[in-house]
Figure 1 (cartoon, protein in one colour):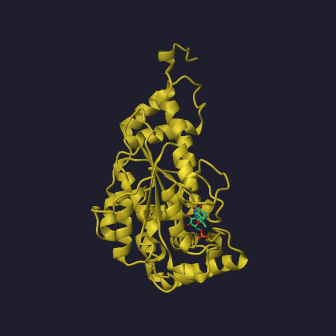
Figure 2 (figure 1 turned 60 degrees about the vertical axis):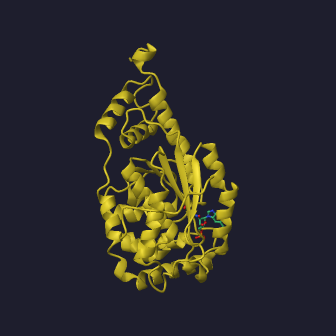
Figure 3 (figure 1 turned 45 degrees about the vertical axis):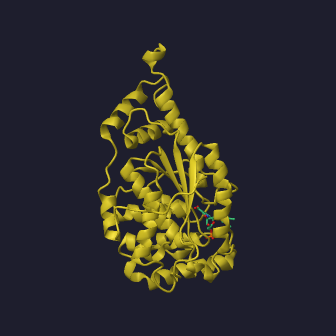
Length: 345
Ligand SMILES: Cc1cc2ncn([C@H]3O[C@H](COP(=O)(O)O)[C@@H](O)[C@H]3O)c2cc1C
Ligand SMILES: O=C(O)c1cccnc1
């Protein structure tokens, strides 16, 4: 665990400049992908015997731009933010827990600390203006353009360009309601279909979450046509920071492992703003949170794991790191039939 310096310069100061940076990010490296596919075909195993691991390794190769990718330098970054909507009784825990958990991350005591350590990831945490919660989005926009751009820039700056793979996680009491509002705004459907129990709200809490989502969409109706305006009006600082980090990784050729419902909701704003913006991202897991399955379907992503996790913090993505590391270790380290003197059938 270490703390990163505050953001200095990102290549955007407006939402439209951020959109342009995202739209102009390079795609995968076709020749490297072709070489990796050819290598996969001559490794000492029956064709296809490593199942989805084979596609994953070739996908990592295409983003890293090399036939033999590596994943021994993973980066996990956790963003924390507070939300005005917590005043509406939409979480089973009080908003103070966000800052308390940041201290826990810094002391090494959270689940994501253990998982980062288990998979050899460098982990950092960035708290975004915890003393200044976003505005209650049932009353108006959660953030100004300056606020959302600052959060996007924090995420952008947090990415280590030398990292081999990125996990962006979050901590923010109330943010399952925020994620549900983003999904309802981006994809439509009833608020009830997108809200879930989060930290464990009861039926009355679930009804308050759906009410908050409905009110947020009604009062911010003018934002609904633009996915980045949706992020500004219905999102939160830690979600925007995750989006900024995921966008930066795209430009750096760093593959991303998406976490649960909240991370995917933030990422969905990118995918809806610029088609293909999540081509460098894989879904780490299927969260137990209500709307995640439908959200992954909208993103056209098949999760690597389904373990009933409903934690956030990047925890499911960090676990999936192990799968991806296994895929790449086989792809880059195995002998070919010729090298090993094994008959290729
Ligand atoms: C101790 C604790 C640790 C957490 N780590 C992640 N979350 C997760 O729960 C929160 C979202 O749920 P809701 O919308 O119901 O508030 C987020 O902070 C998320 O990261 C936690 C929540 C708690 C209480
Ligand atoms: O899926 C998630 O990201 C999630 C679910 C519940 C609570 N916190 C996060």
